[in-house]
Image 1 (tube, rainbow, N blue to C red):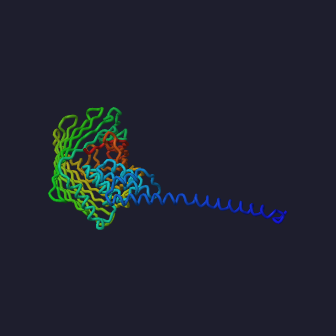
Image 2: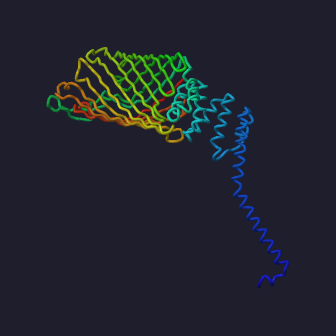
Image 3: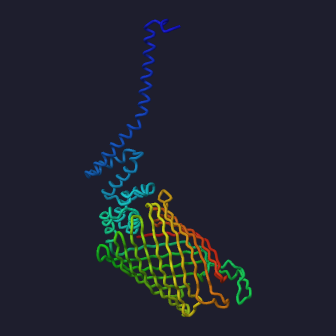
Length: 449
């Protein structure tokens, strides 16, 4: 049967039905394809409207748009940032800080967001946190291009003077003086002696805590005088290893965007199980220079004279110099290479005098969601001057250490920020007393008031 066999009205009705079905299908497909674009267009319009309201200073109207509409895709982060700006401009810095930190936990390389966070932290008087994030920015940006804005932020943080208080407490792993030799037999005068397990005295798990009170007085926008008094203690299950210490530092610092200089005097007093142990007097010089975008060079020299209360023969002079190069690829990745030289002189015990050389490779990286890791590997040697008593050997040590620490930006427990650290270190020596390996984990809580 052909189309000619149908009556004309029937053929027309069938053709019309097919045409209507085709048109309906086309409209449905077009509607489905157009819906995301349509929704995205609405989101863009809403965001642009809110942006205009913020620019005009109409923050309540902008907030209504930003909080009542769900932004997705490319508008999600800009809308969240805009809402943080609204909160900041309407005296709600805590809410603004929370949003900005969440953005940076997902996208740590957005400079505008981090700069806004620095402003919020500075307004709240959180100088330590503001300085940390400002350093993250200056590590990687073009300082000459952004100089004016960054200088304003630096002045806002650095010009705040007066008293500051910070504190910490930490769980400490078991240890002893030499971390326990790994040797079971040592040679003394050519004869073997076995080390009894009872001689491997351990401290047991410990607890450390301390506080720092500082005062800063601004001389100019870039130069300030400061003083800091700190006190701390460590308490172990074996009381013989308990330690207490107090320290006073006073100095002057000059900080520009591209470089900084600092000089300070140091006095510290140590106690061993509440008995006077030693007194140290010395000083420290540091410098830091941004010689190219993302590149920093730094150096430090520290010298200490230490006098022991019960053993004048152990009095020592120690000088340590360190130089390092830091390359920041982004705010979430930085690499540091450093070298150190240390010289300690013990005039009454020349076998304890040494020269030491070491090198360190450090890596700082973001693991996502605001979690950051600092990892380092250090290796070096220590060469002593005179033969070790009774052995006829000039002591030579080789040592290495792997260390890592983890923290989450903005995460606090009862106002304290936790840092988890793990380490493994080992030392080999031709004097068996000083062969050892040690591993441990520590949990530290810090707080800036």
